[in-house]
Length: 89
Image (cartoon, rainbow, N blue to C red; front, side, top):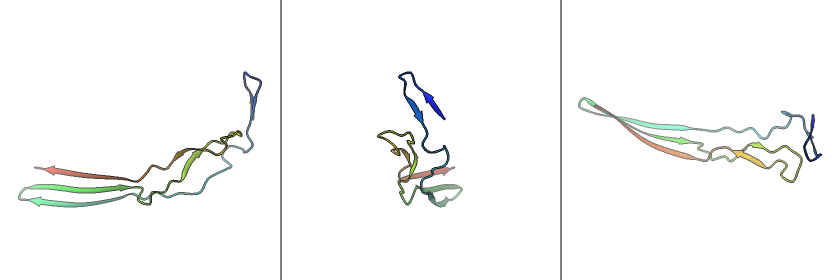
């Protein structure tokens, strides 16, 4: 499908939409936690790790034919760690 722009230019898809896919990627998240008990109270300490392998796979790219063809638009989120403490009394 092509569209004619205001400046007399035409955009033409060289590849049909949905026909070109990048490499498959898997993202691994992990949570470690420990329950601590004190008399009639309880505390939970936890560590959450997101994207453990820190893979930087491209999740979307530009498919228009120009100088930026196949330039990455977004990549997988970076490695992230979160520490939390929950205290019940």
